[in-house]
Image (cartoon, rainbow, N blue to C red; front, side, top):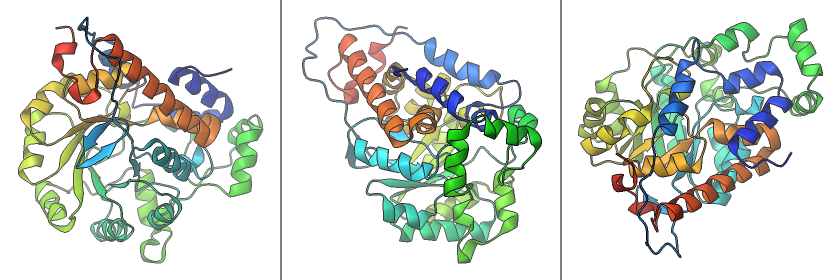
Length: 372
């Protein structure tokens, strides 16, 4: 099957991955109402096109934090990508670099901060989970030394979301070899052979000499973060990190304003892709109010599957969108080429959408292109 959209890649990923691994990628919190709400919120927004506009030459590039990039996209930080495809983080980062967009590495990655910087030429961001204060400080220092331009503090995982698909399957790292899991792996030989050849994924950022902590690895897997981390700690992090600092997990204007007052360079609106609490509002529902409340750039994720979603986000005030599952489906199905193909699809959808609504450039999108 030749994929023509992200959903096609989702189906290919489901065929290649064992059910346990696909459910980790695809699933959400509790009964997964949040997953459906995210998609429904994007689908409910409609366009009001401007006719007789000259759209013969279109510009999809944007400027973000003083840098020009080819598309209004960022590959979001996601953990355990090596479970989908060996060297998954590296393949995602290489695809991002070839496309001319940033890649964000998760604290829970399967490649170490330093290794990724050595292997990939491109703009690299680092996402921080605060598990232990000393460990978090070491990770920030390592990201700075490795040349990462941007630090993302994720704020919506004080405790782990209740992910019922993972609870049923027993998904975890290291993998547990129950008879059901072994049978599932045997029925997906392409995935299994690749994993055995390259070795099962480990949390690489915790395997270095200065971060070898079994308790920290277990805490990351259970999303047992430092639940005491607060606004004062964010201020201290701002003072420590001299690059671009973003706060991820914002869903309301008041928190966005407070972030800007503390000197944060931008916020990422996110409900963690519906993976933490199923009854949070979809980020896009609050996008316009948050974007109008601060002058700092707003980025958004959660539920983005089409170029039309990206155009809607920009029209509502976002500067860019982050892609999580969309590019992970491509990675799981066809590796780096799958990621590149998903990015090409989204680029083409963005291009055709702005042409059809009468806008010549992504940077010129605003609310007048949306039906009220």
